[in-house]
Length: 361
Image 1 (spheres, rainbow, N blue to C red):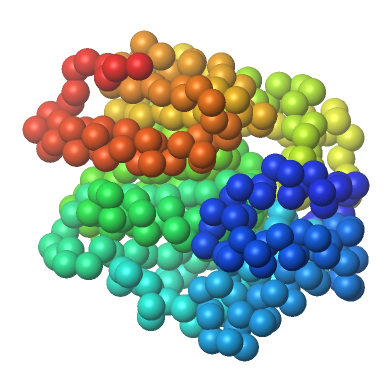
Image 2: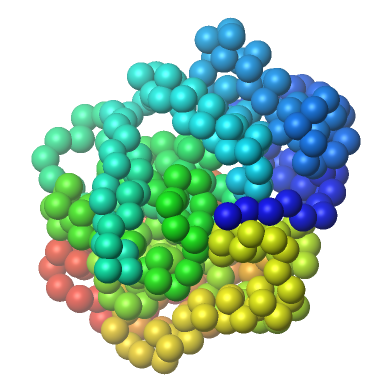
């Protein structure tokens, strides 16, 4: 189920241009596409999916499959609201797999059958193993957001593998990308199944790393003690689901599509659905795993309260970084340094016994 909704292409460029320009695409090509797009939905010259797909096709014809996958990722952005967007995702997958032999890691794509609502759902995952890694190691389980999915996070996934020296398994959260089911709190069942599968790939320790809405699911994994540790980058937890939010950059339509609506929901329908995602019941308990929570203080989507609510909790380190926005992407080197310092310390404590003190804020 999917639907289109009123959203200005220029607003999406305003918000996402740094991400586009920093993804590895030539900036001149990004600028040319930006200048050519006049509308969000028509699959014709001047339309978002048409212009991004034309760029992706040129890359593919030149044999630049990695760049083509990146461009197709922007063609299908921000969600699979129509057939043209779904076709762009299929092309992105094709080009990504063609580029895979050139990745700086060992790569494979697996499709898992995981329990969901009394049956099974198919969940494609991407498995990355850094060069030279042998034996069974702790595993990173990585979930992206409602509009930036596992293939879109390729550069970050490679960087995480490089910085941590650990294998990573990436998946799309329910309602996005390759997922076969809408986003709902029941999606936690899928994540539990993934954690169990990923334990068997490594030495039994799983660190769930979540970005944006994927950070909601990693926060849940950590608070519930289902993962052995959790890293939350810009994850909505409680305050982000309050009525009246999701008003900028088309986020109401992005989330509405992920939730499985087939037409634009009313504000009451949207926020009734989102209220069920609040992690307050788990925040009121104390069964959590060690957690690292990071976001930018200037996030337009997730309020500071959803980061600061973790301050003072057992086995938890919190960083709300000034001068940066959602997921602190413009201070990514600092975020990676924080992760690289926190993770070995946390894994060492997990191997020897439970941690006893909270980390610095």
